[in-house]
Structures are given as structure tokens and as C-alpha cells.
Image 1 (spheres, rainbow, N blue to C red):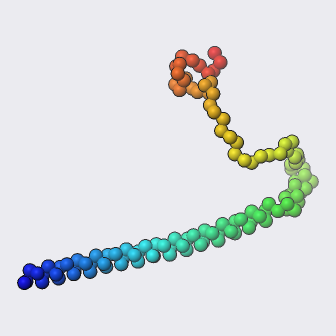
Image 2: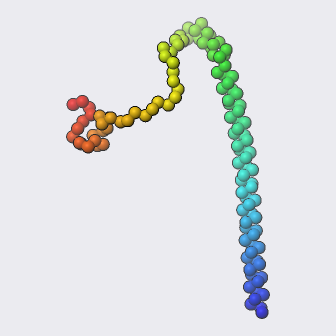
Image 3: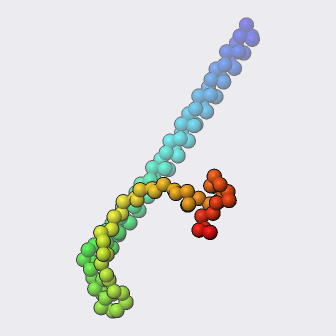
Length: 115
């Protein structure tokens, strides 16, 4: 009977310790989560402030004023692009065999230096 009672007490004690560990881990996760949420909020606030500042600096009237001021002072001469710039990513072009260095070619004696 004594051994059964000891086993029950140890089992309950182990279960209680396990539950305390799980509770502490949950509290640690919640504390870390709240810290990260504060950091995210702070970073989003900084991002909005920087986006607003970029919007102010790239205002068309402000850019025209800057262009006129620099042209008037003789610092720069503004020439428009002779083409419409495309800011999309260019498609990758496949490598030609002449673009490979000698160690990457099938024929190691071949040269891509034109000699």
C-alpha cells in the first residue's frame, strides 16, 4: 500500500511540474509575442513616416522647383530621356557558349578571347 501511495504522489507531482513548465513556456511565448508586436508597430510607424517624407520630396512641384533652381544656378543641365524608360525587370538572356570561361567549356583548349 505504501508503494502505491508513493507512486500516486510522485505521479501527481510530476504531472504538476509538467503543467507548471507548460504554463511558464506559454507566458514566455506571450511575452515574446507582445515584444515583437511593439517592434512591428514601431517599424510600421517609421515606415509610414518615411513613405510620407518620400512623397513630399518627390512631389512634382518640388521636383520642378529643384530643376529650375539648379538650371538657374548653372549647376546642372537637365535633358529629358530620349526614350521612355521601362522599369520592369528585363528577361534573362541565356548564356552563349562564348560567354563561358575555358574551365566551363566542353573543350578546355577553346578560348573566348578571340585568339
